[in-house]
Length: 307
Image 1 (cartoon, helix red, strand yellow):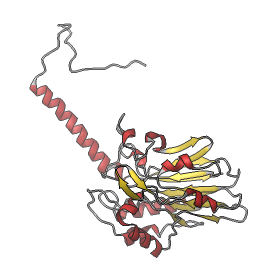
Image 2 (cartoon, helix red, strand yellow):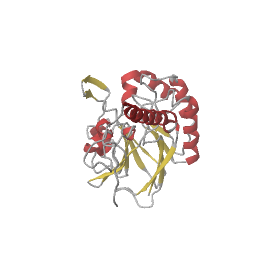
Image 3 (cartoon, one colour):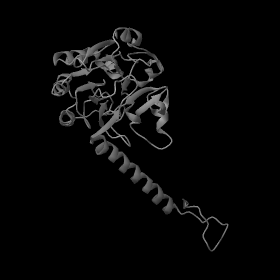
Image 4 (cartoon, one colour):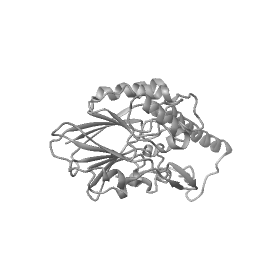
């Protein structure tokens, strides 16, 4: 397929080899067009895409998961409750959509409230927690903490989830499921919980201790907030689930991989990742971090069908 490119600096046909004069008016018009396009893009990212909602589906039977052992999972990651794009009404829509999926289990992946400087509406912890408490699943609703929860108000988030009865898996594994369809659900503490300096953190994660609690041969699903720990996850784990990256949140060509909040750039940014026969699904999340704009990665609830 051929591509035709046009340039404002192309010489006119009747005077080959000479560059035309570019008037001040043409420059102003060109920059005006670019400025309008930029404002339109920002407006779309802030007012349309950031407030949309998709259900992204995955169907797989990962290694060490019994063939025919069916389990459906809804993943809600990076809610970041707060205006302009995640008011209570949007949270309510997310909950209602998740309930319509009728999944066996719902997993909450941390970062429950907005912390960016552009928040226009605060959603108190008891309010977003009460909305999440309306989630329904046969095997329950389970959660982990994210880095923003730790950085800004871990005590408040911990209390809010406890008061509505949503358990937190913090370096803990639990055996669940029907008698003939049992599996382990494990969750590790946040890996960036305590900032120490520029790009240095001390985590609350303890993966070896968490997996040491797995004392039967049943398959394991692992909840982590940041996907970077995937390099340490052993083959014993059938499926790792992560959030944190927002899928890049603003996917500008050639630029966005440099701004994915991961030491591995685009490697763990989004989607179904398979490395050395180990599987991880990274959700693009729902809310926004740093700025209330999403481009190229609409808010999503992830639905996974195993077996």
